[in-house]
Length: 422
Image (tube, rainbow, N blue to C red; front, side, top):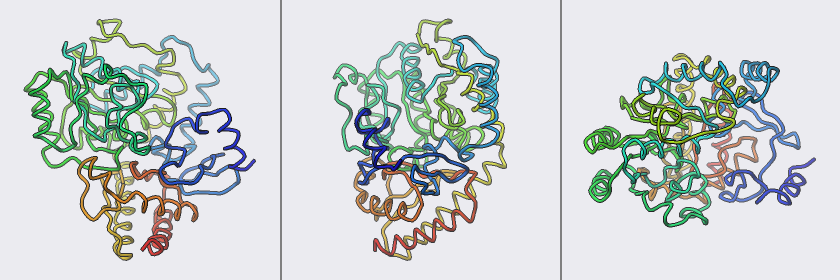
């Protein structure tokens, strides 16, 4: 069956034909293809076309698609049963593995998605402090819970909408939005509100890749501590991707709560929120902050997560960072040779770029980048068998399955497309 035939069937029964908006290609134009299979760095669509994949399930597949150890672990787990609604040993083992890797996390609660983890962290922060206000940063995406959709990144940015219909003013009344990297605006927010917590992506990766300016994260830690508020690191993307302990270890910051997703589930639906025992013990059944989930700690997902983390030691991160660096350095040369104004960002194992003549430090600047040029670049690469994110507000993920030869081929093709754009 062709991609067009599948899309026609999907549109008839799924809103927009997709189960997550950014998959619809609205930002770049054209119609999405349907993936039939994936292996390593490649995916194959329903028509048999092969693509080098730099989306990698939006960062979840750090080891590449159909990693043999993960596939084997999931198959063995499935043979024992797919869901019980009761505790299993692997839940304990994964919690122990997370705590062992992230020193700020003494206890962890497993959930099924990054949105659930963010929702839990925010409710927990309010319950632990007895305060109402949450400060977030424009362009940072923390899932699709009502209170966090104000000036969000990722799909919200891609669709060019300020939030979402169906979110009441009351739902966002206690959400305070300030620009990323803007310390004076942060101070003003603290002066005007009774702040329970600040939630932040330590490297913003949902408005494109935007780095924290020197001292910004340190200031967040000092400001929240001084005000008796909590600091929440949203490491759904950076956690277990930037290194064994994530962004917080890389930057030397100890948050009060951390959110993990994507990599920690090995490609299956799993996420986590963790922090000190003093804060985490406010969760039911020990404390008054309620959270629950029938599929939380699902035995297939925990098996996949354990199999993924078992392969991610420091040497793996060194390899991945070198490959991401190779990709970014090559892209800098490609755009420079073609005379294209572009900002290429290499953040450890993360990669991204904006077609912009000036550095991008916040959401407003990200919006001013040339997203039409990104769309043309996207399609030029897709036509040549390379799949990047269908939005200029997302991250490029080099996986451990990408080889130097894959990266070199990608850069050669990018050079052709860049010349066409110029």
